[in-house]
Length: 164
Image (cartoon, rainbow, N blue to C red):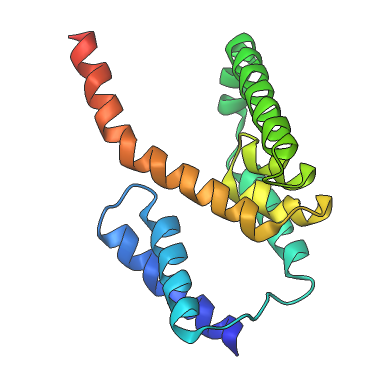
């Protein structure tokens, strides 16, 4: 029952976030709404046992249907910047993960998945496979998305001013 109520609360929060035209408002609205609902309810319920499997399948389908032949051609023409960008981001995440692990903040799987670049939904859904703390991974990436969405308009404005 808590799952269905949380799903409805998340849908409502996501809808409100989208209608408010908040960057990534659907994700942020759903997350904040369910967090507030859980805090108000003071509930410790967990997702159904095999829900992570369903989530990973849905994410895989979502990724696959986003591709078409024109995107593939464009990606092939940009292979060098993509490779450099991925390498730098993965190395930076790995360094941060080792630091957080050595300082005793996080276990190694949680540290690595939490500091890895990538789509929040993919990293959170696969974090359970690596025995990482799913809630901490989700929190790291949610805060990352929130900070990016809060700072992006200012950064774009600065970049635009520099281009003029």
